[in-house]
Image (tube, rainbow, N blue to C red):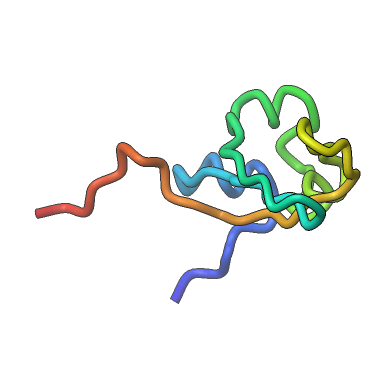
Length: 77
């Protein structure tokens, strides 16, 4: 079994995405992986990105990060 991704570079290499959930108001949003890498770098941990996030609805600092498969992903037939 593969180890879960720990950095933004791991997400990119595994073709996975990142969603953030605000613990204060519950807002959930998918994040653009390449934009996150441009801002934080490939070595930034997923946990650090979650801690740095600021909710656009309630302005709470910090979010729970979820590794997700992009919507276009389809299993091989």
